[in-house]
Image 1: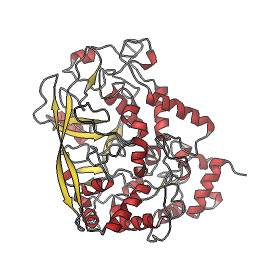
Image 2: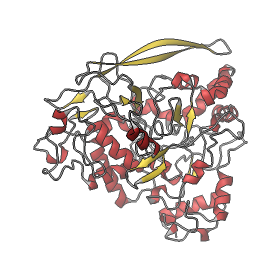
Image 3: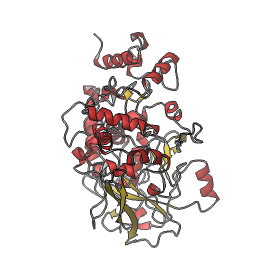
Length: 513
């Protein structure tokens, strides 16, 4: 009888029409085979393309649609912990590493010096004391209530290139943006004792009413941002800002395991097919590999890997040094000398690491293995009708339903899985309404990466509230749709024109994801 992991791989093999002989005992747990691009043979690649082709039959669910993360899909009772479970196909031995990573993810860091040596090094400037404080219950963040400081929403800062050195660094992709000279790459509204915080983000909302074709009125809220209480002098006059909400953590290991070629196959930067949707890849510098890589993570696909995303968050959001970014002062700049000279959490002058390699590896492992919950109500007639509307409105032009992950993924849990993330991981012009006018790598000020939709229907279950889009401005799924523009304008107009029954069906489908 095959082992449990091999049995799950064989189940997918059956879906793809692949014989059992396609899976050696080693390849089934992630070893590359003949195709170096994705660990697939040419015959397997052809079958993968067939199984990931969008359906045209909306009379019933597709095979294996219940499990959006393949064998890693979580089948547990739905509650506030629904985004916090491990991949269902994780081994007992590896689940211990997941639990250790969870503990570090939840750890509240403290300032240095401290008697809790394994937890000190916070800041000196920071946005949050823990990963969990931003990614609430491993889900998405929310804008701060009126008059309160933001924790899971902050402002990115940058300026246009100031000299030839800046222009060369951007051209070579060694940097994604030029930090604001005094305040760095993001506004940090908290600090340790004795060091002033940088300032406070203030949000104001103006109502924006949209009338649908059937007469229904929807009130959107348009945010504007300003910074008050700057403690280190004025911002550069050309400073660009961009609000960023902490996204949900589920499924990131599977997104990392999508073959690069499969992502690039959907890119159409010149809109050669004339469908009004381009889609292009962000190309960003990897501090892990020392070369330009495909961007996958972040609202503008500014990070190439889970590991670099984790290390960047430790540095920028919490002010914790790691092996990838060993400088202990986080995002402090040369114009903040007290911040640079503050005590750090390393063991000595030559050891500035505050999060060790083992700690970071455990957080990476935890992040990669946060499981995606199973679909709900996928055979409900209303949900099936909503799926048809979603497809026929053109939403899948960006929100690509299916991929098959690499065989040679970083972990066996992510290896060779049929997944349903509803994203293409590409950049799209989303129109002036969502524009931040701040470039990041190849992404311009109107472009955003297509966010995955899996788990979106459980947002309120996990977080107790609903906030969508890059800054949390949308309070409902319909509001989020109505903010779409640019390449998504045609799909938006189709939704605006829908009869009420079809519109409700569309929303029921989204809630089932």
